[in-house]
Amino acid sequence: MKSRGLAKTLEYEGKPLKTLGIYSKNREEWLMTDIACWYNTITNVPLYDTLGEESIAWIFEQTEMSTVFAALQGVHKLIAMRQRGLLPTLKTLVSFDEVDPDTLQAAKTLGLEVMRFQSLIDEGMKLDTPFHPCKPDDLITICYTSGTTAKCKGVEITQRAFFDNAFGSVKSDALRPIHVGKSFFSYLPLAHVFERVLCYIVIENGLKTSFFQGEITKIGEDIALAGPEVLVGVPRVFSKFYDNIMSGINKLTGFKRHLIDRAIASKTATYRATGEYKHWFYDALALRKIRQAMGGNIDLIICAAAPAQPMMMETLKLLLSCKFFQAFGQTESAGAITLCDPLDLTRGSLGPPMPACSIKVVDVPEMNYFSHDVVDGVPVPRGELCIKGTIVSKRYFKDPEKTKEAIDTAGWMHTGDIGCLLPNGTVKIIDRKKNIFKLQQGEYVAPERIENLLVSTKWVLQAFVYGDSTESYLVAVIIPKMEQVMEWAQARSNGSDVKSGRLELNLRAAVCGP
Image (cartoon, rainbow, N blue to C red; front, side, top):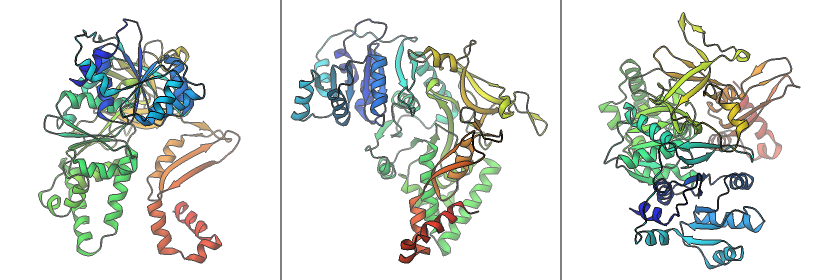
């Protein structure tokens, strides 16, 4: 009802394009604004709360936005940018929060109107204004990729694309736990299309939604408090959960350690043989506290954005006694491209294509991937994954050059991911086409593969690998896992080591050693 009330206050102009920005971390008001736009055929433009000023200015310039709905932090940032002569198209700010008098005065001096979100809803509830809902092929959002340069790309997504992706996801057996009475925890940015389409599914199916408090370092605390049944995340977050759990297990001794080791070994053997991930005895006795630390109710975990380490995914599934699936997608597909099947135990599989999406592979000769490849006598087509269908974007906003680079003349979107089509009809990501470079000796290197190997160790939190065609070697920038480093330092060092510099040398040897 609140979204309907808000929609009545959003002026409908009947133009081919009217844009409205949303600038906030995940919260109820974000979704209400989004849904209100659907009621009145307004194209919304989500802004990541982590975007730099250059990217924000570029998005405003491209879309000519005049109105932005924002949290108080966003209101302050946009006013500060306007004070420096940026964002000339901005006219109106709608704040989700109370705005202090100094901020209101600063906005007034700049000729900006600041309105309260709740005031608009209250006003709209009294109006009898007709709605002008969007049609299937209307442009419902321009979702900018979170690129590293100011010239980020705006992906055009229609109402049909969102609907077909959500409908296809609901039809998947993987999402059966999503139904009335369950709860969902939302923390992936709603500017990210996968989180957004999941929220549409959650709303349609009557789930309760809990939002994180806004601090990424406290997600574990938030999950424990909310106790959700459904949790969606990215490999980096789940790797952090995995590391914390395994660190706790490794500190155990005696009977407790023996019991958990037996539980993991027994459940792993059973799961690989039958697909069963629960055990009446071990779940109740050995693994109960681990599950309670994640809220105690988790029934389904979906890992998106990038392929997860198979061992990490399998171990978490068994420790938490829940379904754990992977989805593969990108902004240009309005969410998922593939979604795992619950009965498929193939390690590394990302599942079959969504109903509204076709997939093919294209040869990449410079990386030795071909659609006619054979592995162990079985045809396993390999190459760059290309997608086509109603969920796939047709163009980048006001960027014909980037559109031409990504979409070929037959309408296939080239993803830049190297994959193989497995005999059971599922997809597996094995490499990345765009992130390759040639060293001095003519060797092609895919840094992402090396980075993934580095972060799979107990020492490395993040890794960046770089090479240059004028050199014959690679360099890596490593961000260590500080918990592991501090534990190592306390056990193996003393004050003299720190003063003499030996501590750093010993740490490098430990991280870089076998």
